[in-house]
Image (cartoon, rainbow, N blue to C red; front, side, top):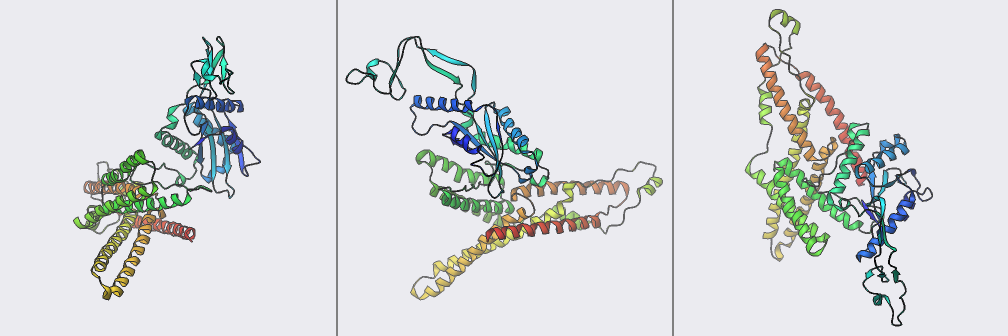
Length: 494
């Protein structure tokens, strides 16, 4: 969302076929006269307020759409998204549906008013002569707007008694559009709307949770003067997110991660902004301090206990005797007079458990390997600290090179760790772990139900061969997708 100091100019820009190479549709909920009067109203109110800065005449949302939405009729699609906003917030809008030059970014520009038209104009009648100075500010006496010769100064005016001195056709600005929660609310609303019309479930969108454990990275727009600053900030945010992934895999409670984020980043950034404004260098320093705090928690987990495994489920699987084929249910019915209990069915989520366990163990192995290299670095740095003096210069140089190589390896390993789950179609480690844990619970419930069924019926369930075949087929599919994902990332990196 952005603020518009020149709403008429912006409307002209987004809706002009001459200025937009890929303009597909324009939709307006009211006529252009509304926007002219809105601009005049806002400028007049701004002058009266005496506020310094720039007058904001309207606001604009840019809504990114899935590329598959090009299959929908542009006019109807744009109308749907625009009327959705108007129905939710009751303000007038004008919108345009665009593609960028390379046709890789399908999006909507939606301009909306922060004021509504009044049902009837509100007019104020002067009960006495009204005096206004050059800035449009009301003054008490006529002397205040006269020059030394007793003449009315240029730009000043007098409104006689009985005439209209103020006419309002708009309400005051709706303050909710300035609130921090508004943009998040709109994102969730449009995400829900988009997901209704997404044909492929894999393309369904999710809103970034600003109150979650991760830090958002910022998009760098075209010709952005702060591009380098944003790029550097994103690097630090990415390192934090990678460390969060490691903490989650290690078993650090999400609650503790949030506490570190809030105390070391959120609260300190807020206090700094209130005191001295935004300071990008301080933000990076705070993020690094928070990263060190998380790494301490990760190290503590490794020292306190060995890696957590799924011992409970694995014990059940290992304890199973050799499976025998299931007897035909019909013959069982003939032999028994009592009805046969229905055999438990494995849910889709429970069926995913073996595959998710493989991914989980892969993450654990990678996380352990990172931790081992971190221990190696700590050991090398101790040796560097002990290699003092002129005669140990060569040894110190070799140790420093060894430390730098280990740091480079760790950076690559952290990047790979966070990309593993993305290669399998998950947004991040937190999302993967949520499904993994839910799958683990459902699989445990399924095995308990099977054990009860076998006890009651005397039968044995042998779904191991089918499960293994399905798991192998799924692994082949995901390995292909995983490989293609990393190939794509490698091409992007090059």
